[in-house]
Length: 238
Image (cartoon, rainbow, N blue to C red; front, side, top):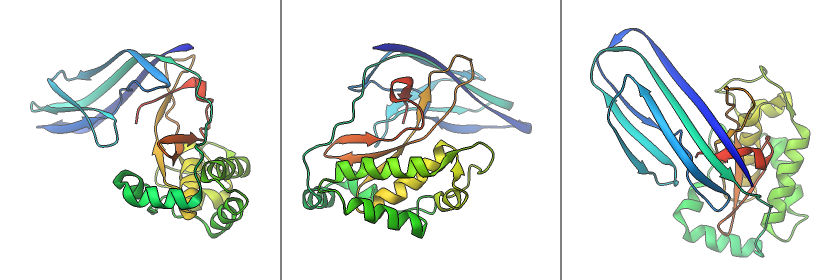
């Protein structure tokens, strides 16, 4: 087991005072079977009262209003988390079983639809179908598809932006975590494997934290993930 101390700051600067702002922050991790939160706090400047709840996807949410004039807003999240080994495990599930279970689960159904960011490039769709055809179990297929995409796309900063799509990143064969995750999500959903985007925080030597993206496929309640950061070095926040 390993302990990670994480500090992440998000700041907004306005062009003059704003009279009020209404916000929701998803910056604090929750305890799972692979991570245990020892401490977690969110400092808000200007200071204000907060409400906290867990949303539909199991993410910790901090909701707050600032009703006095302010020219900036700074959120600083600090967490100490114990992470445990997370071996990849695939349930003994067939493609037919996955289709039946997906049709009965609202959460899983929502993870099958494509968005403008995840809609796969025709080449990616072809790769996904070809790989899936080689496996009798969707869990193994999901891992193989993610590996194939990860091996084909080079991790490079500055080629894509926050609004880039997975198809655009595939054309360049370059991108960052978000881009690779979008490509993998599109590929998995193309072959009927429910998948979602997850946001982990990385444990880094410096005070600056990176915000990589994971693609997670649903395999009878288990997640088969392909992060671009080592699994033992990350804490999932959402």
